[in-house]
Length: 116
Image (cartoon, rainbow, N blue to C red; front, side, top):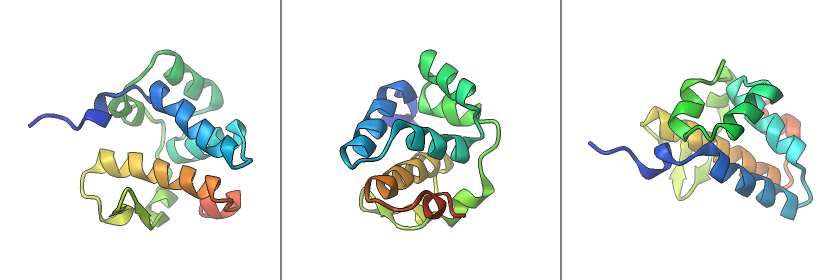
């Protein structure tokens, strides 16, 4: 079975799109980074290293220090699919990230996005 195309895409190639989406709606790169660090457990330095070495999404999530257990509280639809119903673990992690960036761009408060 072949891997989904997004698994082999570099995280670094998608990261600027997360930032652009947030900034178009008046949010910041710092907020995007906070979401990613919350989700993955990466420090800012580790996150920047993953971007620098152009890790693919599969490696990015495999090497994540500690996926936040509260990420399972993320619910809703992204790309026409309910994130809580996605069975493939890696795709679900990617869609959790997409959902949180969407919430940021829609003006949701950080404490709500981070399920605080």
